[in-house]
Image (cartoon, rainbow, N blue to C red; front, side, top):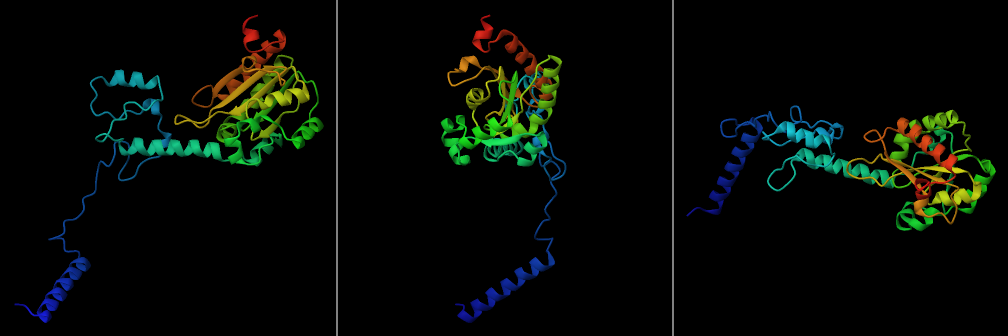
Length: 299
């Protein structure tokens, strides 16, 4: 039977041998790790590319599909996450990382504010609704429809009353959408209005605003037509989608069917430059008809 001293000696001997193996990298007993040549289907070496640059309409990972051309025709008609294959019942690594990235972009679009420097670059002044902060904005949509008293005073001071067209820019639920599209939309819109012979009041930016805040602006400035650019609720396809709402003489009695809308203004939908000209053409129709929404459609 081994004594306690003998056992201690064996343990020390084994530990010493293991330590030597680690230091010398004993290749005989410890095989070298081979470099993976095919870590994923879209990467080079062991690093993933920027998955956010991949167009979902062109991304198909199904190995050896029976009809690849048919699959790609389907893919080109939708940005939905189809044909991305799986590992067992789960997403593959690349689609899962892209999903997480798109989700993060959507959250950022909602939570961050439009950069004040960007608003200044557009030449707009800023007012705010009665909302105090982002948390209240998200939990109290009704407050995003009401201008603060300070905002009303500033608007009346800065803007001429009763313009033919009034433009407002509102952050809405995506600051990213405003920053991505307003800079290209506004010059195109203004030039098209000029070509139609329509004048415009002084544009401005509303922080923490909802769509119906345009009704209060209409009450204050009494424009013939009011156009509101607002960030749309982001999704997993894009966080950069902006909408343009239009209304003839909006006021506190305005109902939703009085408004007109051009949505999905972004680089993957209706390009902002094209959207500016298109919205201006609708404004011209509203101005000439003295009606908007369902009333215009029924004329």
